[in-house]
Image (cartoon, rainbow, N blue to C red; front, side, top):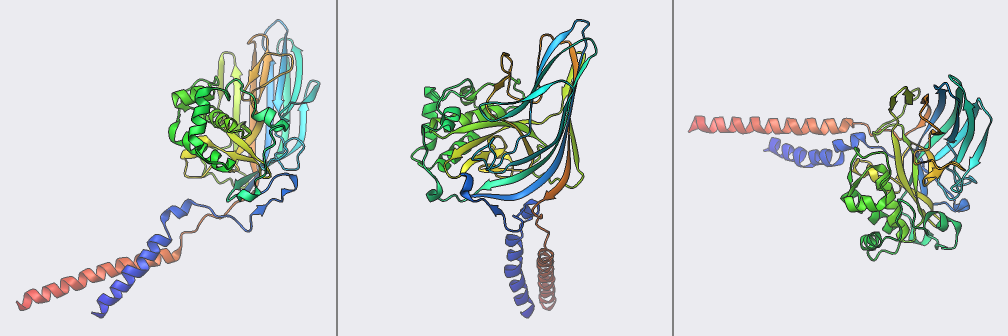
Length: 417
């Protein structure tokens, strides 16, 4: 009897604690390290946490070689990896997703910096090349990518939208190519999705979840942008369509929103960069053969007064990591706003790195981005608790002991009978 009592105490008390309190699913999770930094609202940005950060060195090398006997003119536009900070003049109201320091920029022809209406910065240059002449660009950056999340925003902290501000003219008011804000179908869909919600945060979450539940990812689509209406009607798309649809549904609710273009260092959200780890991405063309391994990507930012621009990634909703009101340390931001164009030239591109404008396809080029981890401040992985193993061992031993006792008692009873 005493042995059985011990078994019941161990098995029905300690083992349930072990199972429910130390789920194996916790082994891959992370927790905030130390005390997360919470911003002050001095620059119109507040209520965000920096939970993790990684510092990278980013080296960019580009070479174009003209391969025709006849001379040709080329125009180039390279996006710079700008700061994304609250006190940056280029990115006002933005939480510190990307801290950027350019160490050098060497271009072998005259160049100048261009700043567009969306505050993206580009190296703009051009030249006429003869056979086998080259244009080269080499740049080196220190980039810190912070994992930023906005959690539990108090409704009292949210300011009032001023529809006359320039931010609405850029990111809300107009119906544009691929962002069909005035389309009746999308207007009806947006109003139906948000329902009676008033808070911009609640509206954004409902739109995010609706896209997550109703749009199917299709990685076989051509590079050509399809736009929000196409994505809604066809219930599919890649990261660009996911983002365009979320941006447009938000704008219909008078919430400024914009697409962010860049590339991912890894398409695995569980990636934990370690000191010295390197990634090398290339785009190249030799003769008729072109290749690339860039993980080009698009995500979304929407604006809330007194809170700032909040990042979301509707495409990565199916991962085990939350990407509503959160961005991680795996995305290099190149361009914000929308499609851009080089002044006086008709060419446009959504992925702006590099953008080459030329008369004919008479060149070879190589473009390489080397990314090296030079520092990391990551939350520690939850350790496999020794106590969990102890509880499991006790539980298994108790079960075996009970079976042995039952068998012995059964054997004695049969013997005397």
